[in-house]
Picture 1 (cartoon, rainbow over the protein chains, first blue to last red):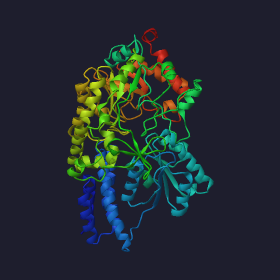
Picture 2 (cartoon, chains in turn orange, yellow; picture 1 turned 45 degrees about the vertical axis):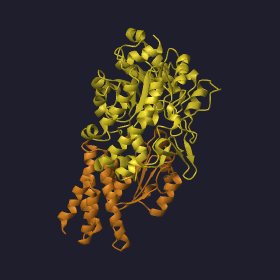
Picture 3 (cartoon, rainbow over the protein chains, first blue to last red; picture 1 turned 30 degrees about the horizontal axis):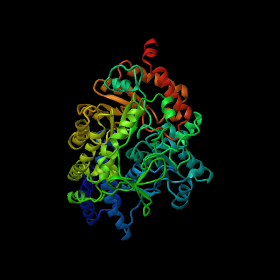
Picture 4 (cartoon, rainbow over the protein chains, first blue to last red; picture 1 turned 60 degrees about the vertical axis):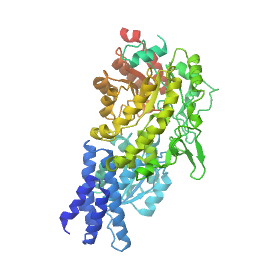
Amino acid sequence: MGELDVRQMNDVVIKGDVTAAACLTEELLKAGNDAAVIVENGLLPGLRTVGDKYAAGEFFLPELFSAGEVAKAVVEILASTVKKGDAIAYKRTVVLGTVSGDVHDIGLNLVAATLQGAGYKVINLGKDTIAEEYIDAVKEHKPDIVGMSALLTATMSYMKTVIDALEESGLRDKVKIIVGGPSLDDAYARNIGADAYGRDAGDGLRKVESLLG
Amino acid sequence: MKPRERVLRAIERNEPNRIPIDLGAMCWSIVDSPHMRHHPYKELCKYLGIKDYAEPSSEPLMYEVNNIDERILERFGVDVRYMYPHFPPFTYDPQGGAIVGLFGVRMKPGGYYGDPDYYPMRDLDSVEAIENYPNYPNPDDPVYEQEGLREEALALREKFPDHALGIELGFLGVVFDLSEVMFGLDRWMYNLKNRPDLWHVWMGMYFRVTDPIVKNILMAVGDILDIVVIYNDYGTQQGPYVSHDDYVKHLKPYEARLIERVKRWAPKVKVLMHSCGSIYDVIKDRAEMALDVQNPMNPLAKNMNPEYLKEHFGDIISFHGGVDIQRLLPFGTPDEIRQRIKELIKIWMPTGGWIAAPSHNIQPDTPPQNIVAMYEALQEFGDAKFFREV
């Protein structure tokens, strides 16, 4: 199978068709396509299109979550090939978590799925994550990016606590920091010393890519 | 003009003698979680010199205070008082450390809001599985007969003869948020697109089991109360959950049923729907369904600031809420709050159409002086005479 078939993945993601995506992934792998190529040329452009259409108000949550389901299904199949020794070359590593005191993780998981689908290795620390957990994860996984999420105004201030803690541990310069959540904006991100603010999953992916140049 | 008349005049979009004021229901109260370090309700009591307040209580799935001290409501000029139907008690599942409520909803205590620890319908992928789900409320359960509810409503009316009175229907007055905690938002949305059959059968079951219970409630209290509160969160900060076509096709019919059944069994009451987020896309639809009041106007969400809403929908529906809890109340100064309250009053006077309340539960990091500034300004500047003179 050639390049054209990998691009079929793009349409499948946009349609949000999980069954078709799983079949197509298997076929593409069988035909000798590299996992990274499937991600780069199939899944990622599809997710970008879905993210752009969502941001533009053309797509809504059903389309967004269906694309997320497709990404999960594809990534799962591709990940199973790793065990066979056909390793995926992850682009970079991202550590993500919702900050301490906040138990909201819908946005977090959406960002995780989007980044995973785009070929990043994602260490998802989940919700209610304290500064020490971020620091331990940075030491262990040596990520390029640390992402923090918060839904509540009462918890978003904890992002600064984490950034200060990374600073004190001498790790701040080793990572780029991106923050997200409905009560945040670019100015808030700058004020607390983050490198970027992601408005939603699609924007988060774009910011991650631009931070890593 | 008495509080009740003021509220009803405003809902009917006539000039009230003062902007009506609200605080203390499930979605416009104060968050005070026993699990966290901020305790804004207790701080407010302390700030107002009220020492003998009752320990804050809330229904177990959220941490909004549902027993705000009467002295505070009085001082803030709150025009509405609320009551609740009879539900079976929540149970505690030590296995998962979760509280189990109506429909088998499971919430884990902690944080500022409870959080689902498991979505009981998430993996149900056939019509039969949804029909045979074991934890639907049984309308024949004696608790749902609502014995004594009428007497409670009469007692509330006696205690507050001049106030507007409302009842909250909880899970008996909501389909969207309930679907979120039953399926998970992602699965619910995925199903809407890919398995609408599952959504429609779930909705059929919901109305089959809840219609008789809601009928019992409203037949008991509908002639005593003024407001029935229902809920359907439908927006993110940026926009509605689904496209307008999908809303009309899949969601609108069930919103219409939620409203219609209240009006059928309590024809005199006003229906107030709480619906978070950027929901401008469906306000016209809701007005068509004869919804009386739309809460909460999250003003920082897209197209949801009161100026925009008044201009586009002010003639067809009334609003409740609108005082920003995301920025203004937690981070603003008392002067900024007073200024914004003046602006809001200017929008809604003399036409009516607004009951003033926070745009959701007042958040944990909100200083008590800001809460007081909001309610004092509403009383000071909301007066019709004052408004005309200024």
